Image 1: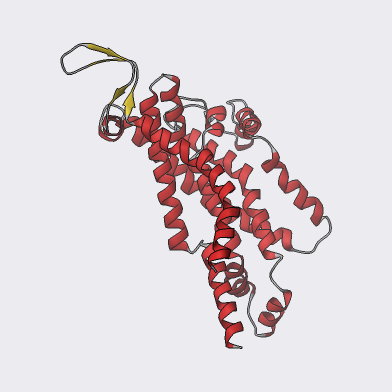
Image 2 (image 1 turned 90 degrees about the vertical axis):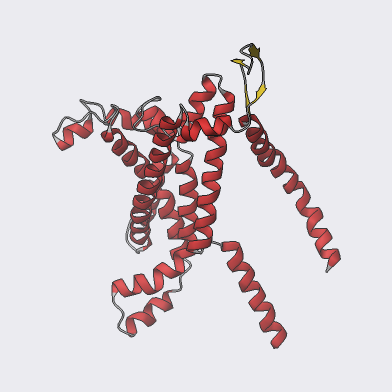
Length: 307
């Protein structure tokens, strides 16, 4: 057993080394940068100090309760709002799309291919497309026959970002759920029909539990993407718009103004926020796919030993 463990560690070492360089080093370097300030400042005696200076947790206190706290809490609430609304809508729409694409009908292959179009369009191009649609004299206002300033700084701009994001990324969840649906044996549904189960009962008791692993993974990936949202609101609405400003955007703005310590503090807080959300999602909702696989493997080993 010890020899197999050493072999496994040897085989995994290149991957772990790459992860340490690509993931570990930037995280540590970013946290280290958040503890310093750069540029001109005044020391305790009133003298001008230029260059890098150790600031401790001053950047974090300024973010949470200092001069930059209002911008941070606004960006935090926007990020959370976009995450909750878009992921919820994408999950409902994606599941419906998967159920429709799973039916056997003529042109099903064409429908599945067309669903990929929004997901295949680059986000920047998608933002420009929806910016044209949401113009004051654009197609959306012509359809609803009402003048709404979708790309201005207000709640309407939030709805515009939500609509564009849901349109683009719902197919991602739909295709992953469709892959899970195709793994469900048809005999299970036939047995449920014989037992008198209705369509809703078959969906709630059979379909949803069996596609749960694929669905949870898709939702987790989408949550991670939305928490790091930057390009779509920046292209569709614009930067420095309080109604759509996210944590990534405010970190980018601080870095552009050469306040690297503050930018690193925002990035570190966002990293911790994403890590906490991912951990709670995995533990509370049962998205631990690796843990489930391990349990199944251990159960199979025990059954073989008992036999």
